[in-house]
Amino acid sequence: MAMARRAMSLLPQWPSRVFSVELDGAPFYFAIQEKHRGEEVPPVFQRVQEYYRCYSLFVCSSDRIRRAMFYAELKDKLLRDLPPECDLSPMSSFLPNVKDSLIKGYFLKDNSDSSSPIERVLRDLIQRDPVFVCSYLRGDNCQLWTQHLWPHTGSQVMEKSKEYYVVPSEAPEYHPATLNIINSDVFYSLEEACDVLKKCGDIIPEATSILELLPSRAQARSKPDFPVIVIEGLDATGKTTLTKSLRDILRAVLVPCPPQCLYPWRARFDKEPPLIRRAFYALGNYITAEQIGQEAMKTPVIVDRFWHSTAAYAIATAVSGPPCNLPAVGSEVYNWPSDLLQPNLVVLLTLDPEERKRRLMNRGQGKTVEEQELDHNRLFRLRVEEAYQRISGPACVTVDASPSADQVLQQVLLLIRGKCHL
Image 1 (cartoon, rainbow, N blue to C red):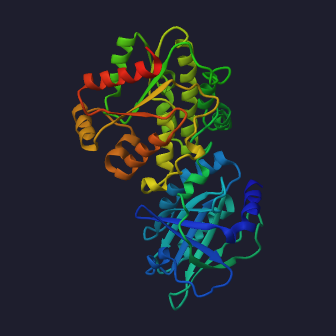
Image 2 (cartoon, helix red, strand yellow):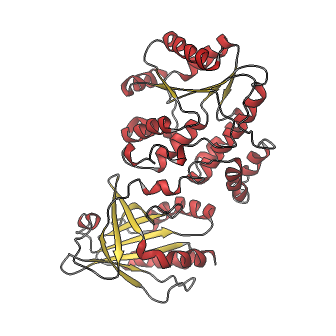
Image 3 (cartoon, helix red, strand yellow):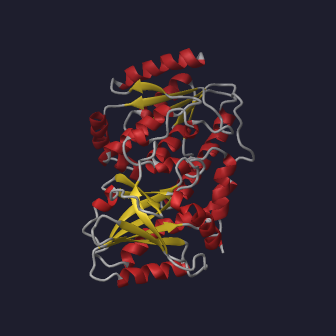
């Protein structure tokens, strides 16, 4: 029933959708229409001319928890069940400028002599799982490709295949992933993040334990008695050294984020799909906020990372390509959550990429998956850094971390004394 409801909501607007296929890390866009008016073959199909058939699968369950988990499992399922000559690429579809309209899936390129093994796998999927399947056929003159939307026999949504012509489409102003970021990749209230983990309780028992750690109510924007200073930055920019020095000099309390109480579950939730993983870390911010609020009643508080990190990494992961694909400066995705305690000052330590790599090598410590991604993916690092800079309420104050630790400390102390009057 859930599949049928979701499918019924998608079908009327299907011809209005834009489709995006990621090839070699770059998105290629196309659209569909019922009549062909002499348009050129879209670039993505120019690149797959050696294939006679292509397919797309879109995950379309109305239950977003199930949708997120099934999408995460679908790639492994396809790689296991499809013939080895079938090539797989990430794909999405969306309504331009319509929030929460993005649906995700995969694009399959079939170079086999017979389509039977692939179509057998796909037909089995639509019988049991929340997927839409389309096939793409190349015309005899190679100048036309058509999309055929398969009937979903499990829910009787369509009685027969629907055919459309594939035509070029302009790229959207911003990456389509930006349409679904709010309360999916980045959470803006305690209630929204809690809702995700509550719905996971039957499949992830640990989610219930996390919810039991939460404050009884969200910490509002009320200002604490003593200043709260957040230190942000990529690994190896000197955060640990600086935060400890500030703690000692200012006689402050040092609070880490994510909080220590979540460490036993981090490895478990790091394996989950982005929706669930991001909700977990969002709740960590609210637990941290309660700790900050209690400590800041009696002493200054230094925080090692906070909401800026959670948001910047999530936005940079959701959006591929260069930083220009990020949501525009001033977008609501960069706004501080209204129910989360606000720090008095946020310092962002920046460092030349080569110097940061050198420091990481000297440390010889294990790195998170995201930190490994920073090292080998220049565009990801640039997106993270740009997202940090765009977050507002409060915005980051950038400090160059390349001088000596003492010089950086003195510069930050000047900022604190000017802003927080310590």
